[in-house]
Length: 103
Image (cartoon, rainbow, N blue to C red; front, side, top):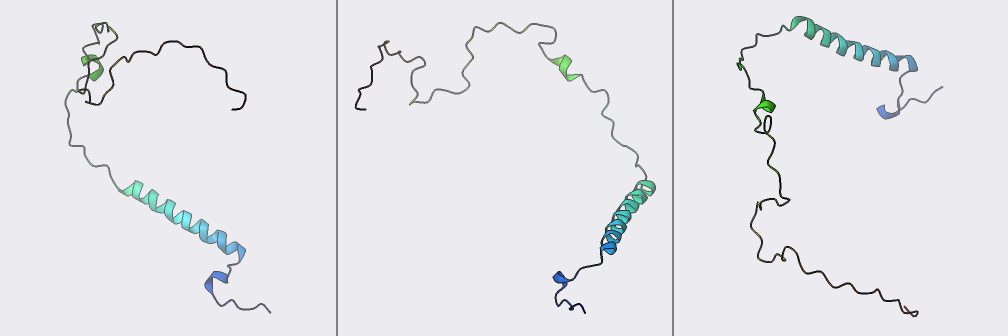
């Protein structure tokens, strides 16, 4: 005789009932969705935006070429006081030293 389980976590449903419960739950959810789709009507739309402009065609570059860039972009923020100069002087080219053997 099988021992009766004390706690619900230890009890098991017979195998066919597991699939029956899952299938019934799925069918209830699908039926609810189909009923809502069938009986909830579309409401009238009350908005009218009129004729919207074609945004890409309103760009100033749509009919004109952009001005050539000289490579320098305008500064958007002022320089910070602790900033380094824009082009610091480059160090002179020096030959690389050989490493000492004891290093």
